Image (cartoon, rainbow, N blue to C red):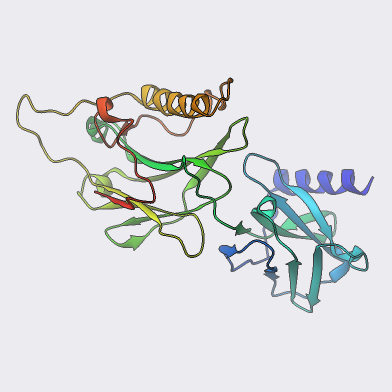
Length: 297
């Protein structure tokens, strides 16, 4: 009954658009397997520990309540450490399955208010089948749209990763992440950003950097708006639907190679309007970067 009530409060706060006042300053945290993770939440107002909750959203799943701080007398791997204006969730003996985004929540009157979330990555999400690909807009889109959409595709990971975008060295806001989960549990993540078209056509360097753990080499993919090409030398491009189809095809072939006999991804997932691969479509399968070759211009 309490769980149903909590889910009702979640929906109520989302529908009514209640303003959040909980702050989680840890945007991302890498922790080794079997260590203890600490996730902080604070507020300017006084917080009552009995009204605090913690939610976890794993990739491809909806948020679930994992801890009520009022039940802190019960021994478990999740422990609440409460102060007047803050609450800390301690997770002991963390495992890879504990990876995800953690949200603190607080009951205020009849609403459940949420923090902005903190990502936790346990261990190394990189696998032998991991690769990164960058998808960019059609050149002629600059004449018909006001924004440019770029996507970073991260295939074959075992858990969440940290994706950051920069434009000529300046960090951008975090992109929107979507995930496709295969039958074997591996993930294909698609992180996309939208920028003003004049920013894209200014020929600045756009870089997507992917971190799989705290110490391993990150993978970077960079591109810029293409310069004018001589007549007859215009590179081949593909429509967004074709690019996504080829990504899905590569995922399927990868799983088939490992004796998986079913289509692992939802082919109807949409990311953004029209994109093309950084490489011409004939070299799309080769136009990928593994951690061994961590940079590609």
